[in-house]
Length: 82
Image 1 (spheres, rainbow, N blue to C red):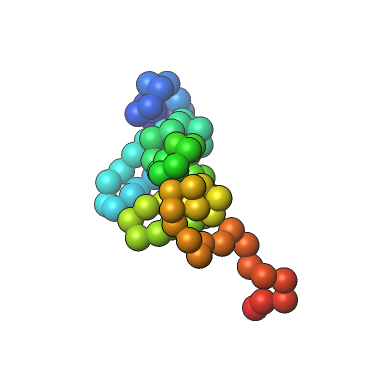
Image 2 (cartoon, rainbow, N blue to C red):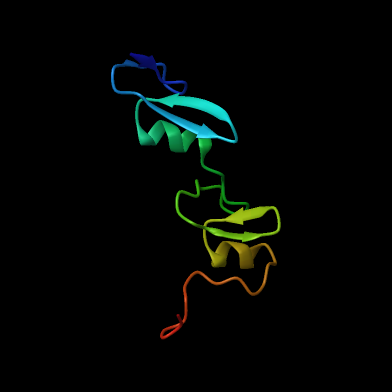
């Protein structure tokens, strides 16, 4: 059994996630996201997908990046692009 580092639940099916050689133990993905997912620089939501990046900043979407003055980021690939 392991103990979730976020909620403290003592659970027999915990998961271990290693980030930059640091081990973390969680009882569910929700707790792992809460602890590890970055926050959007504009709206503050957790970025659990790819998001978009500009230098060291990460945003949940291109619209949030644009609100912060970042230009040229896109959320999707143009139709027909490979």
